[in-house]
Image (cartoon, rainbow, N blue to C red; front, top):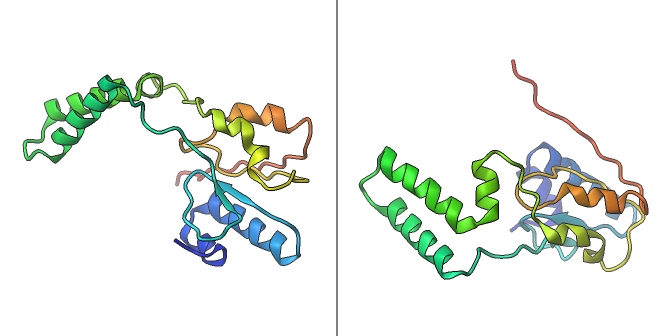
Length: 159
């Protein structure tokens, strides 16, 4: 766990940009919150997007148990790898099926409650790194009519 000041040094480009904005706003005495997919900070103003856990169905638990057992076995190979992949698909339900067929998984309903995470309504929302298994980008359509939402898009270029 890091303090807010240390956090930016341990992140990639988008995370670092978001962390620097968060710190700069606070440095100018604005209330600022950083909403993240996985909290790695001890700062009270860094808020983690709550996520539902793995499906608790019996089938899901069984698939995860077998998956875990196969992952720990000494006998590795293409058959075990293939079986682990499909056990994960079944265990994750709709999310796993979407991933297996190359569809973006947008089933993150807590993203729609983004504006409820902060203690008070923000004046502006900066959006960075909206992929990574925690954010439904469709929520942007509910935010943009009520708040400014500057978003930067960048991509590493190949050599």
